[in-house]
Length: 373
Image (cartoon, rainbow, N blue to C red; front, side, top):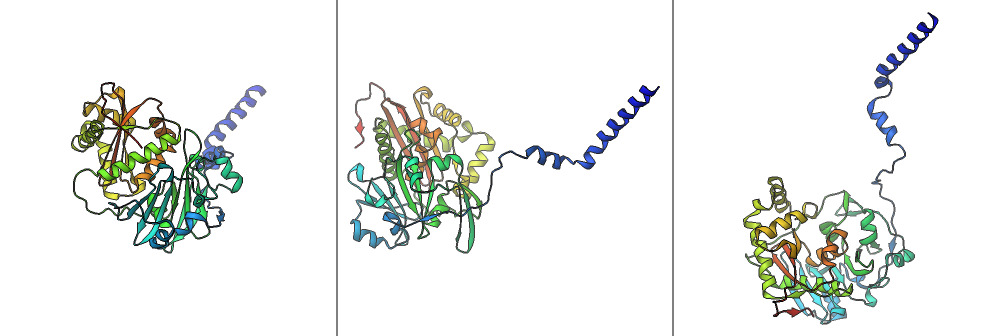
């Protein structure tokens, strides 16, 4: 009898405890305790170091005429669909440099050349070399037009696209090639351009939308050639063969571009079509639309191109084509598409703020090609 009463007492305690547990230990509290000890992403902006301004960084925000006085007239000048003027320097690939000019002032400089003007940085250096010179920060808090902004870098950003702040309140993004781990370019930019391109997570504040101007229909051959040159520069720097360009590859790229815009329902789901339309309406880096690999394969099929011998990318809106290409080469997913040792053809179709790149295996019967410089 005593054993039965003891059993009954324990049984009642278990039952009562089970019913009362949610009262004393609500689910939210229990989940918090379960999460205790896990690493939680912090959005606290820690103070970051501003390094002394030097080289190209001193020209950001200054009059474009000051740059011309020091470095001479550019080889080319082109007004872009985004409202800034693009200046190109460097007859030789080793001297290649791009300058973005807006309202007669310099908003961005993209240096792919190893110049004393990029010091403390030099093309070809490793992230470990940079880390010996300065700390790589993950959070940046600053003010632009009386609005507070907080930018957070993920681990991949810190490893391949770290952000550097200068004491003249400008920034630089260091682009490291994902294949070699070596610095391939330095992009100097002001706050507005950073908030427009924004390759990082924006925790606080609103992005600056792309100011697209009206453009006539058709393809922009000048911008396509600029993209081709930049891609081949990065390929050669990695020790990979440059892409070959011919009329056929360009026609195929333009054909795919038209196929996507005219027959998107054969490539995209209804939800993805809505995402694409939303991207066109918002025109910000946050809502950028990019085809997945599977979608690009469907596009190749719809365009009647051999899926086994081709790959590529499609993205929009594109504010700065060279910045987009540098981002691709610093990203593991996209870099792998450029990392082939075999000879390949390339085609680039650029229209308004949309860009399609087509990479095709070189056919033996194609003999009329043009090697990249």
